[in-house]
Image (cartoon, rainbow over all chains, first blue to last red; front, side, top):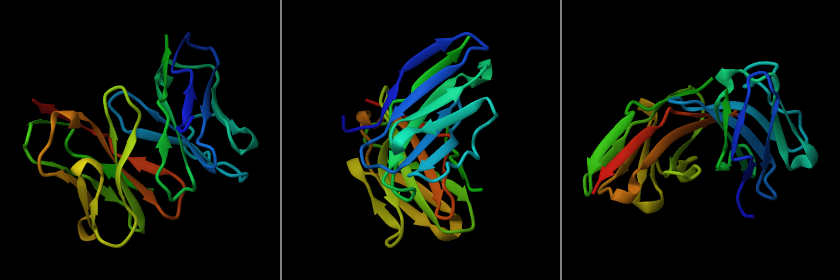
Length: 113
Length: 113
């Protein structure tokens, strides 16, 4: 496909469970971002990958959050021992490089019961 | 770190009315500026961007924005809105010396037919 693909589109899980969110960026885009959008708030930066460089993890809210990007393409955001405050829409975006406009996926709506 | 303020949370207009959505940012360095739009049920799309040059930027669907450096502002305008402009509008700032993109909280625009 031509756009950024995220899966699943919706995820409902119980508090304490681990979740994995997937992002498949646009082919050729070296930059990949994860954001989350909580109700009534703007997008919150989580993590940034640029090519094979070490990721910028400065936005991760706690050590329960981690992400990897295999082969410079697909990325997985993992949240361990989920809490109710993790409920949000998690958005992935990719771009040719960090100074180019980002293309967003449709997001994963995560609900923690 | 940079931050972005969108002062209007919800704007309601009638068709053909003129639109101006405010965006102010705080950052002393060089920035790239963006307006994104999220139509109901869709992912974020780029409306327009400013990197350098003419501070009056034309975007898609008749939107424009003006970068006023002295006011740290990048307000979005449209002379005559349509019902199809009903959406959430996000202003975003990318400081050129760091990786992340900061978004405002968004402004919900409702255009009454």
